[in-house]
Length: 321
Ligand SMILES: C[S@@+](CC[C@H](N)C(=O)[O-])C[C@H]1O[C@@H](n2cnc3c(N)ncnc32)[C@H](O)[C@@H]1O
Image (cartoon, rainbow, N blue to C red):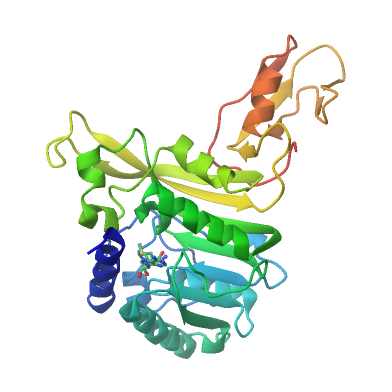
């Protein structure tokens, strides 16, 4: 069996016998007015954060959801799209597609606004999405791409890029590792399938997103996810995994490199009313301006009175670039 087949078998098992808390985080699923999430769908929440950003889901976007799980996020996206095939959900595991369909039928009974036609479930996988080039506004995946070995991760990212319209968004949540995960754990296919040993470091993960062509990446959340403790995982010291929620935009990469927003701001503290770096950034004295990490780095090197604040890992828009 390949590691991808091991993962498929694992998810076939947990589709038939839900494993509550498999990937859970210390936050409850997003609640919206008049949204009732069926019990079984909640039990099958196998995500490690959220890919649904409610303030950015106006205009009934078309969403391609990769790795449907129990259908929780497909339902949450459908809450905003509210039209037939507004959400297309893809999964290679028959038992998972079946479980999601059943859960969505239950959701239709419990939610008067929802119709099962709002989510179309298709057989397919992250490496061959059954969908045309440049045809969707959003591609979302939660806690799936971290399972992939690095070269497969790049294939999946390329495929997401292919199906997004220009300006479209890749919304992801994945575990990342605070230092490289040792080989013996990476090779453990079951741990990998359980989202515990395939994670890359933050820098590697972001670089792979940029390498396939995404010109802007925004970090929406970063929080502790799991501890691989030294004793149980045969490690010289504990290894903390974090969960990272990100949104990557299919926009051209600027000549001086991609823009990655992590919540930094720049504040001019000099005697003038404002500071103009003659590169598109005008800082009003005393007022924080959101900047990408590249701009933050450039501004911090200037011999000027500019304070650059740390990453908050919670960026929600505005600022440079
Ligand atoms: C960790 S679960 C996450 C499920 C869902 N995103 C959630 O948040 O609950 C991974 C999902 O990806 C599916 N999957 C496994 N291999 C896949 C592949 N190669 N391409 C697409 N989906 C895959 C599994 O069947 C499962 O539904």
